[in-house]
Image (tube, rainbow, N blue to C red; front, side):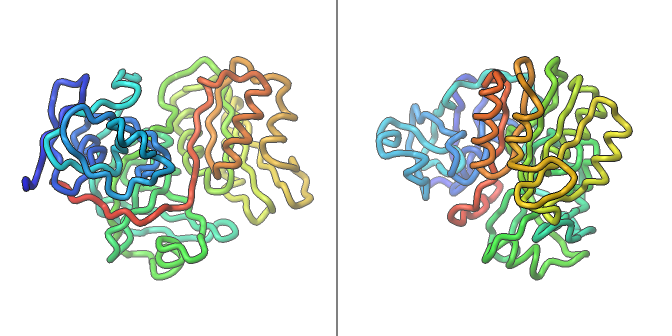
Length: 346
């Protein structure tokens, strides 16, 4: 058995080297060969590939993401599949250039410099990296749980201009290996952390003519905070409306930060909303608040991040207000699936 394999991505001119046990997606991103992906944990299906030649191991690819019929038809999940021979693969949808800058996936070491409670069961984690990480506003990194060789994904809340100091917003999950067992448990300022990034294709990096509506639920605010800062600094959208949904006031955070941005930028508008508590701001589900604020969203774009139910409700609400589906971009925060060991770099 070989300790590495050659993989040709159909439509590209070069082969990539994949180590035994390394996923096709991990190897491609480390070689700066972009492949579509979102969760990297086998739960979304964004990274599906057609295996044109060669043999792969599907490992623990969930059947709800990759059906038996799809496997029989030669499809595989790039984030889960590992080669058993040299391969030729083709991304579903092709490899068209989307004009977005892409940065290679890399491993980093960092030091915890901030670990603060900022809302109910929510912490701000800031990590100072040993060297800069280039990324697009909206992307995420994978933090490696000490002793487990398992990663968990958290979006960067800082803008790409702050490439040495990454900010994450982390919600406590009862029994969570990364949260209750680490970030809300044993982690302390000064600790060394291993992580890899950047990952994901949720972003706002190119100038656009459309006004942008950003809707975040809970810690879904994190990538939107990065996007807002980057977009305002680089004049990427004529108007930006940020909505943050929570149940009670204790769920909101960084309110003063966004209020200050409003005073500095006349084209930025911040609208936090509460669904279960009376207060002097907008009340109700955050998607209903958006509906009330806009009679029509035609000619606008949207960036949505949060729990799947909130994201789906937002998509339906914006379509009802005549927003074009192609201008609705989303990132769903889901509960971690079965533990997937982090690949070893060849």
